[in-house]
Image (tube, rainbow, N blue to C red; front, side, top):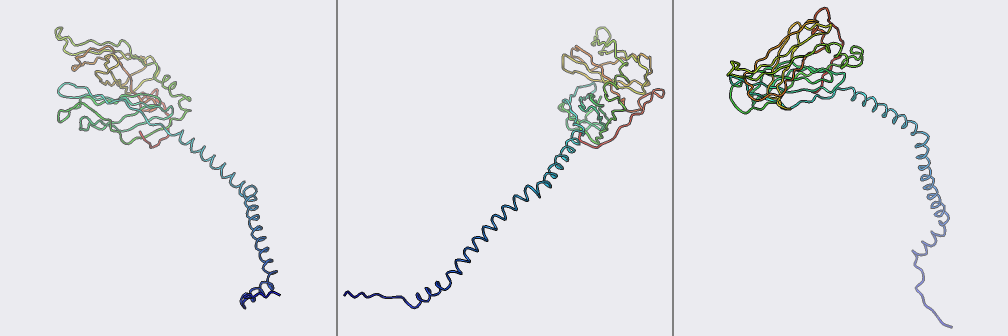
Length: 303
């Protein structure tokens, strides 16, 4: 018979084995309970997320989305209703007699139902001209001028437009029949410029200055307290000279002859352009028998 010798179990190992035998069922129970609890929490959280997404939060978020879309549409309408900024051409500076200068710039208003008024001046080679008032009717181009400006010092001939105190006015479509262009044609379309002529200077024939001549014919039913006309001399598409003439109390049925002398024009001229400047939306421009009252709303804005 063989004899085997072993070390046996220690007292601690025996106590541990005894504790496991007595508590094995409880340990298995709590492990299963914990796993089941974790599963319940996971599935419960997932189920609540689905319920909240499709049954609770979804209607509220849908309303929020609709409100955002409605607000965006309102904002878009507001942005569309705001006037667009005007556009300006290059500022042109022309030499005049006695070391003076004439300055001009074209300003275009692209808005169909907004007109703008403002204060303006020119910075000519670092010197500021006088501040004047200007306006541009809806969908129109107006030439701003500063004539006979005499700088303190002689220098380069460059200019910059300076604009301040801009006021935008919205035109009531009912007051212009829904179309300002047709309104302007009805109020001023019968006032025409005819017989435009230009004669260059000929000192040998005792004519030291060039001469522009034209007739303003008012065949309409409206009279006007004051109408300005901007006269541009062109060589091809290039402006070589600018002037401005004011006609007071232009009555219906009247023809007014205008002569302009140009002492500073030495280059050839191929065309003379004569354009009126009048704010037909201002009831103060009409003679009393034709005075109109046009309602507009006012807004501050950019130029």
